[in-house]
Length: 235
Figure 1 (tube, rainbow, N blue to C red):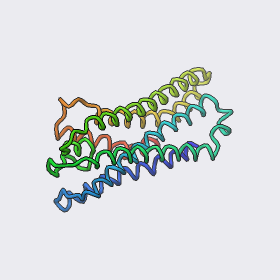
Figure 2: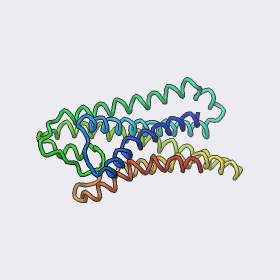
Figure 3: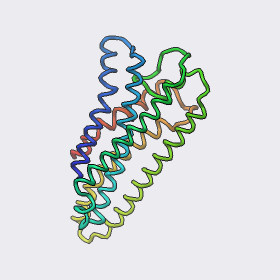
Figure 4: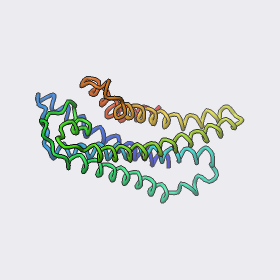
C-alpha cells in the first residue's frame, strides 16, 4: 500500500509542477507574459485540483503509516487493494470538487481592474485583486470552508503521528525503532514542507505582502514541494 500511495503522490507531483513551470519557462524564453482567459482558468483549476488531492492523499498516507506501525497484524486486512483504491480515489475526487468550487467562484466574478497579474502563474488571490464586485461574502465562505477542511486533515495527521510516536517508543529494540522512524520521517517531512509553505502563502497578513515576497512564497509552495518530494522519499 505504501508504494501504491507513493505512485499516486508521484503522479500528483508531476502534474502540479507541469502546470506552472513549463508555461513560465516558455514565457521567459519568448519574452512574453501572455496567457488566455481560458488558459488561466484551466491553470487555476489544475493547481487547486492537484495540490488539494495531494494534501488529501498525504492525510490518507498518515493513516497508512498509523496502521503499519500501531496495528501491523491487521495491516493486510484494513488496507487491502480495494480499500487502497477507494482511499486514493476519494483523495482525487475531493481535490477535483475543491478545485471546481474555487474556480467557479473566482471566474464568475467580473474583472475590470486590468488584466495583469503580479505572479508567474494564475493565482486566485491575484485574480481577486482585479475584481470590480464585492465578493467578500462568497470569498469568506469559501475560505472558512477550506480552512475547516484543511484543519480537520491536519488534526487527523497530528493524531496519527502522536499514536505512532507512542507505539514506536514502546518498541524495545533500537533497530525496530530506527526502522519505524525511517518509514515515517519522509512522509512527515513532506507534510511539514507542504503545509508550512501553503499556510504562509495563503494566511500571511496583508501588511507584509509585496510583489517580490508573493513571488518567492508562490515558488516555495508550488515548485519546491513537488521537486523535493522524490528526493525525500528516495533517501
